[in-house]
Length: 193
Image (cartoon, rainbow, N blue to C red; front, side, top):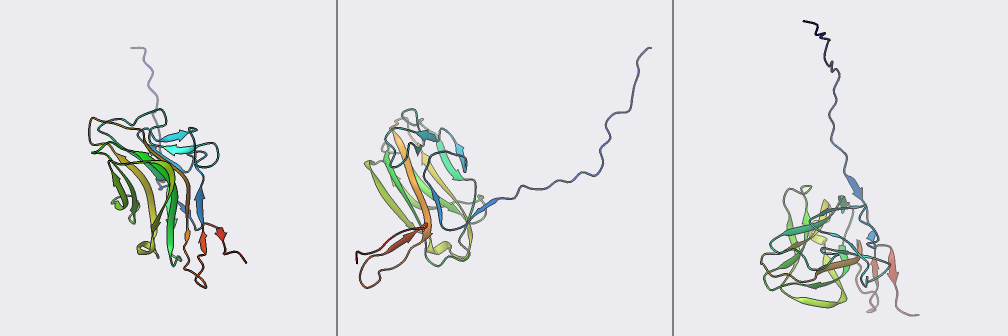
Protein backbone atom coordinates (compact mmCIF):
# COMPACT_ATOMS: atom_id res chain seq x y z
CA UNK A 1 0.00 0.00 0.00
CA UNK A 2 2.41 2.63 -1.20
CA UNK A 3 5.40 1.64 1.02
CA UNK A 4 8.71 1.20 -0.63
CA UNK A 5 11.12 -1.22 0.94
CA UNK A 6 14.75 -1.31 0.08
CA UNK A 7 17.68 -3.47 0.98
CA UNK A 8 19.03 -2.78 4.45
CA UNK A 9 22.61 -2.76 5.61
CA UNK A 10 25.29 -4.96 4.15
CA UNK A 11 28.30 -5.66 6.33
CA UNK A 12 31.39 -7.45 5.07
CA UNK A 13 34.99 -8.02 6.21
CA UNK A 14 34.80 -6.95 9.85
CA UNK A 15 38.06 -6.80 11.80
CA UNK A 16 38.01 -6.36 15.57
CA UNK A 17 41.28 -5.49 17.28
CA UNK A 18 42.28 -4.39 20.73
CA UNK A 19 44.02 -1.11 21.33
CA UNK A 20 47.70 -1.42 22.06
CA UNK A 21 48.69 -0.30 25.53
CA UNK A 22 51.22 2.47 25.84
CA UNK A 23 54.48 1.10 27.22
CA UNK A 24 56.50 3.60 29.28
CA UNK A 25 60.21 2.94 29.62
CA UNK A 26 62.51 4.01 32.43
CA UNK A 27 63.27 6.68 33.32
CA UNK A 28 59.67 7.89 33.64
CA UNK A 29 58.60 11.21 35.11
CA UNK A 30 55.40 13.22 35.38
CA UNK A 31 55.28 16.65 36.98
CA UNK A 32 51.46 16.66 37.29
CA UNK A 33 50.76 19.58 34.98
CA UNK A 34 47.98 17.71 33.12
CA UNK A 35 46.12 14.39 33.29
CA UNK A 36 46.64 13.30 29.67
CA UNK A 37 48.62 10.16 30.64
CA UNK A 38 46.26 9.19 33.46
CA UNK A 39 42.90 7.46 33.83
CA UNK A 40 40.94 9.29 36.51
CA UNK A 41 38.12 7.60 38.42
CA UNK A 42 36.01 9.52 40.89
CA UNK A 43 36.98 13.14 41.41
CA UNK A 44 40.75 12.99 40.64
CA UNK A 45 42.02 16.01 38.77
CA UNK A 46 44.45 18.90 39.01
CA UNK A 47 44.70 21.53 41.72
CA UNK A 48 46.67 24.75 41.56
CA UNK A 49 46.54 25.12 45.35
CA UNK A 50 50.19 25.15 46.50
CA UNK A 51 51.71 22.47 44.22
CA UNK A 52 55.12 20.98 45.03
CA UNK A 53 56.48 22.17 41.66
CA UNK A 54 55.06 23.85 38.59
CA UNK A 55 51.54 25.25 38.51
CA UNK A 56 49.54 22.15 39.52
CA UNK A 57 49.51 18.82 41.32
CA UNK A 58 47.23 15.78 41.16
CA UNK A 59 44.46 15.75 43.76
CA UNK A 60 41.73 13.24 44.56
CA UNK A 61 39.51 16.19 45.50
CA UNK A 62 40.65 19.37 43.73
CA UNK A 63 37.56 21.34 44.82
CA UNK A 64 37.57 20.62 48.57
CA UNK A 65 37.08 17.53 50.70
CA UNK A 66 36.76 14.08 49.13
CA UNK A 67 33.37 12.38 48.96
CA UNK A 68 32.38 10.01 51.79
CA UNK A 69 32.00 6.26 51.19
CA UNK A 70 33.72 6.20 47.79
CA UNK A 71 36.85 4.87 46.10
CA UNK A 72 38.66 7.04 43.61
CA UNK A 73 41.84 6.35 41.67
CA UNK A 74 44.49 7.87 39.43
CA UNK A 75 45.90 5.17 37.13
CA UNK A 76 48.68 5.52 34.58
CA UNK A 77 47.18 4.91 31.13
CA UNK A 78 49.77 2.31 30.12
CA UNK A 79 52.29 -0.14 31.46
CA UNK A 80 55.74 0.61 32.83
CA UNK A 81 58.50 -1.54 31.39
CA UNK A 82 60.69 -2.99 34.15
CA UNK A 83 61.90 -5.91 31.99
CA UNK A 84 65.49 -4.67 31.86
CA UNK A 85 65.50 -2.89 35.22
CA UNK A 86 67.81 -4.03 38.00
CA UNK A 87 66.78 -1.87 40.99
CA UNK A 88 63.66 0.08 39.98
CA UNK A 89 62.16 2.61 42.36
CA UNK A 90 59.09 4.85 42.42
CA UNK A 91 59.40 8.26 44.06
CA UNK A 92 56.81 11.02 44.35
CA UNK A 93 55.96 13.96 46.58
CA UNK A 94 52.69 13.92 48.45
CA UNK A 95 50.65 15.44 51.24
CA UNK A 96 47.42 14.11 52.69
CA UNK A 97 44.67 14.63 55.23
CA UNK A 98 42.49 11.58 55.92
CA UNK A 99 39.68 10.88 58.35
CA UNK A 100 40.30 7.97 60.73
CA UNK A 101 38.70 5.16 58.66
CA UNK A 102 39.95 6.35 55.27
CA UNK A 103 43.14 5.32 53.51
CA UNK A 104 45.43 5.99 50.57
CA UNK A 105 47.21 3.26 48.63
CA UNK A 106 49.82 3.00 45.92
CA UNK A 107 49.03 -0.13 43.95
CA UNK A 108 50.68 -2.17 41.20
CA UNK A 109 49.33 -4.79 38.80
CA UNK A 110 51.33 -7.33 36.81
CA UNK A 111 48.31 -8.68 34.88
CA UNK A 112 47.31 -5.42 33.14
CA UNK A 113 44.92 -4.26 35.86
CA UNK A 114 42.95 -7.39 36.75
CA UNK A 115 44.48 -7.82 40.23
CA UNK A 116 46.14 -5.04 42.23
CA UNK A 117 48.74 -5.42 45.00
CA UNK A 118 49.29 -2.69 47.60
CA UNK A 119 52.82 -1.24 47.69
CA UNK A 120 52.15 1.49 50.25
CA UNK A 121 49.22 2.40 52.48
CA UNK A 122 48.37 5.09 55.05
CA UNK A 123 45.17 5.24 57.04
CA UNK A 124 43.56 8.05 59.00
CA UNK A 125 46.54 10.37 59.19
CA UNK A 126 47.72 13.80 58.13
CA UNK A 127 50.90 15.06 56.44
CA UNK A 128 50.51 18.78 55.71
CA UNK A 129 53.94 19.40 54.17
CA UNK A 130 55.09 17.99 50.86
CA UNK A 131 57.15 14.86 51.62
CA UNK A 132 58.90 12.52 49.23
CA UNK A 133 57.80 8.89 49.35
CA UNK A 134 60.04 6.22 47.82
CA UNK A 135 58.90 2.69 47.02
CA UNK A 136 61.24 -0.12 46.02
CA UNK A 137 59.98 -1.89 42.89
CA UNK A 138 62.72 -4.56 42.79
CA UNK A 139 60.13 -7.33 43.32
CA UNK A 140 58.66 -6.35 39.94
CA UNK A 141 61.85 -6.16 37.86
CA UNK A 142 61.66 -8.16 34.66
CA UNK A 143 57.93 -7.39 34.27
CA UNK A 144 55.48 -4.91 32.82
CA UNK A 145 53.45 -3.21 35.56
CA UNK A 146 50.50 -0.86 35.88
CA UNK A 147 50.51 1.82 38.57
CA UNK A 148 47.67 3.56 40.39
CA UNK A 149 47.10 5.82 43.36
CA UNK A 150 43.82 5.16 45.20
CA UNK A 151 41.90 6.85 48.00
CA UNK A 152 39.36 4.69 49.86
CA UNK A 153 36.80 6.64 51.86
CA UNK A 154 35.09 4.10 54.12
CA UNK A 155 33.18 6.42 56.45
CA UNK A 156 30.77 9.33 56.49
CA UNK A 157 33.54 11.68 57.62
CA UNK A 158 35.74 13.38 55.04
CA UNK A 159 38.90 15.48 54.90
CA UNK A 160 41.01 17.30 52.34
CA UNK A 161 42.40 14.10 50.79
CA UNK A 162 45.59 13.40 48.84
CA UNK A 163 47.80 15.56 46.61
CA UNK A 164 50.61 14.03 44.52
CA UNK A 165 53.34 15.72 42.49
CA UNK A 166 56.74 15.09 40.85
CA UNK A 167 56.34 11.37 40.09
CA UNK A 168 59.59 9.65 39.11
CA UNK A 169 60.46 6.05 38.28
CA UNK A 170 63.94 4.83 37.50
CA UNK A 171 66.92 2.92 38.74
CA UNK A 172 68.08 3.49 42.28
CA UNK A 173 71.79 3.17 42.97
CA UNK A 174 73.73 2.39 46.11
CA UNK A 175 76.30 4.48 47.95
CA UNK A 176 79.59 4.98 46.11
CA UNK A 177 82.67 5.64 48.25
CA UNK A 178 80.38 5.97 51.28
CA UNK A 179 78.80 9.03 49.67
CA UNK A 180 75.16 8.89 48.67
CA UNK A 181 74.49 9.10 44.97
CA UNK A 182 70.96 8.88 43.65
CA UNK A 183 70.05 8.36 40.02
CA UNK A 184 66.33 8.49 39.44
CA UNK A 185 64.44 9.17 36.25
CA UNK A 186 67.37 10.85 34.58
CA UNK A 187 67.93 13.32 37.39
CA UNK A 188 71.06 12.82 39.44
CA UNK A 189 73.05 14.37 42.19
CA UNK A 190 76.61 13.61 43.11
CA UNK A 191 78.64 14.32 46.21
CA UNK A 192 80.57 17.62 46.05
CA UNK A 193 84.08 17.35 44.63
